[in-house]
Amino acid sequence: MIVLGAGPAGLLLGNLLLAAGVDCVVLERSAEADVRTRARAGFLAANTVRILDRHGLGDGLHRSGRTHSLCEFRTGDGRFRLDYGSLGRGERHTVYPQQELVGDLLTEYTGRGGRIRFGTEALAVRDADGVRPSVTVRGPDGRPGRWQGRYVAGCDGRHGAARRSLPPGAVRRHHRDHGISWLGLLAEAPPSLDAVGYAVHPAGFAGHMARTADITRYYLQCPRGTAPDDWSEDRIWAELELRMRGPLRRGALIQRTVVDLESDVLEPLRHGSLFLAGDAASLLSPSAAKGANLAVLEAELLARALTDDLLHGDSEGLDAYSARCLARIRRAQDFSQWMIRLLHDLPENSSQHHIRRPCLETLRTSRAEQDWFAEQYVGV
Ligand code: RFL
Image (cartoon, rainbow, N blue to C red; front, side):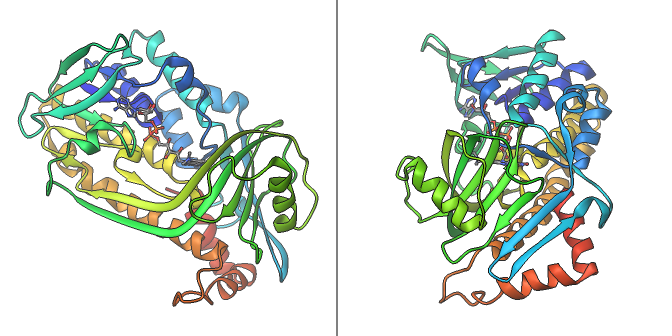
């Protein structure tokens, strides 16, 4: 079994296959140090925590993660807070930086003797329509190589080899560009609020999310085409404070990324012996923080299906894998799009231009809407 990519999807899959006794190797393009330090997601859904606990992989997040259940909306009409942990199903997030989770999964995998090749870039998946697919690679020394197995799991993200290797017409691609971009920032500064902050302002959206006691993630809506270094630190903090309508605890900006809000979902998530999971299967905008949570959920489903097939000759799980994942992806996608409408003034020529204010007002005043929001926000 060949797993491409050592992100949350590939490493959870690797761990579960290893624990079940399925022979596998993980091929990862980057160096180990890069994999362990890539800061991205931070909000783990309750179901993600349940999955990790189920397989004895939740120790790190229980030790160092913090539960969280408060968000605050700030608009020209005022502010309101939702304690989503007491709404809907009463579930909370666990805030645990993605790189910590990846580090835990990697340590567990290698500690149990799991095989992984860093600095090994998958170039193409070949013969996926047969029963002996192979992966051509460029190794750390630049030399070409080839791995062969019964199945290949493409967990190598949106721009990985798995997606690229799909023959034209093998899958449908559902792509939607929301026309909105965010400058994603990590600040070496303590959180400024005890809540996730969502600010809607005529100058654009701004977001605040705690990561650790000393690191905070911010988002700033920016014009499409903005480069990460276009804005000075002073301008960024001034824009954040303007849009968040209050002073913030400042610090050095240690990461800048521009994210175009898009969704890009493939269907089905299988081509013969090649299966897709995580961002390789579906890329969603970070507006609802669903990507890493879907990656974990899909990896567990795929691990169980592969184990049933390879060890017990039962292919039902593999046959149903794509449909089961897509049902969850579509719900997450729908909610991510709802969050985009809630948090941005869409262009004046858009038919949904006027939708934001009534949406926010319903969320502020309707308990039924709040319960629905809480369930969608923490769930996957
Ligand atoms: P990853 O984590 O991108 O890992 C893919 C791995 O594959 C490797 N790779 C290759 N290896 C071999 N050969 C090749 N040809 C390869 N090409 C790539 C890469 O080096 C990498 O190690 O994918 P995975 O496992 O599917 O996990 C997905 C999540 O990382 C992603 O969905 C989330 O980070 C999205 N996301 C968030 N999700 C949440 O659930 N909650 C959040 O709060 C949240 N915040 C975010 C986010 C994504 C962000 N960015 C950068 C778009 C915040 C940001 C800013």
